[in-house]
Length: 152
Image (cartoon, rainbow, N blue to C red; front, side, top):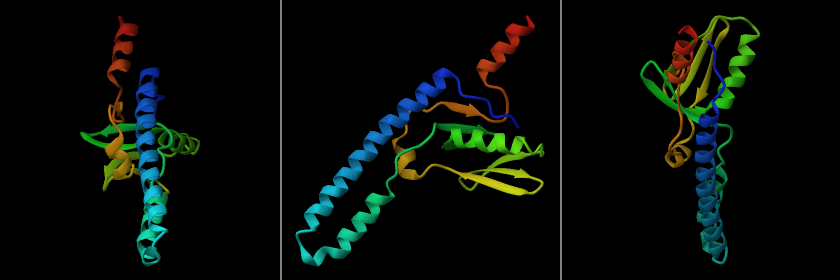
């Protein structure tokens, strides 16, 4: 399996979607912080304050390059940078690999076992818009056009 680098247009689209989503996540964390500070004045709200604190801590910024990866008609939202790093590390071993999507994870099976890359969390996925779609089961349309141009 070869995981190609993202094109400039795909990088830009992914970066823009990530930045927009991270701004919204930051706003959500700020709102939770305000609510926690408001609840600090009341002594009976310790459990509510603690629940909000952990909810705020669970809101993490999006890292890497989020993309919609497509394989055999199924799609999954994941960090493409992480997938490329994993593929390059397995490439060094020279193991044959098969890739499938199952239970909200991209699973890479190889002779020594399997590794799964989980889909991005729901709160991040809801905020990501206009992501590039990357086909993992074959060449992209752009690559097919380049091949046609080289052959003609």
